[in-house]
Length: 171
Image 1 (cartoon, one colour):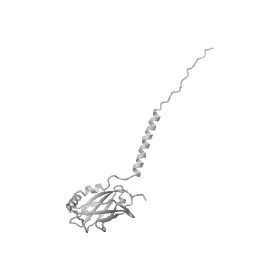
Image 2 (cartoon, one colour):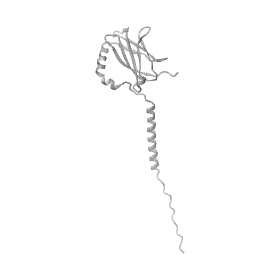
Image 3 (cartoon, one colour):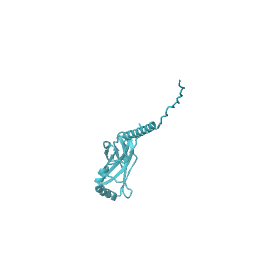
Image 4 (cartoon, helix red, strand yellow):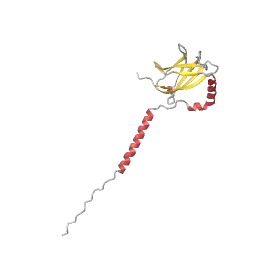
């Protein structure tokens, strides 16, 4: 008879965790990127409003018009947008080079957004009691607007731009 043979006990091989760690890391990276894309698509507010292509094409005309407006030496100031029933009301004060109010002007203010052209609005300027002017812009959504101001009534039209961040109080 043969003598018993002892077979050494083979320990189970320990599996390395690196393939699972690599897969988990890649999965977290893809998940994070998908989350950031969803945030970007749900908050489509642009930082700089305006139509840059149109501005570039009409650049020479815009420069000539702005030079004629600067020659008027008018100062146009807008007060903070006051929320109203149909958007916001802006108070506009126009003074000449000597600081006197400029009466008898007509004009428009166009509020443009770069993220959604359907939200662009335009409203005429109207005289305000006690001097100055006001305009009721029918803004429908809070956000960042570029205001294109055109005033007629002087020796040349006055044109200018302002920026408006409209954030009405919660009701």
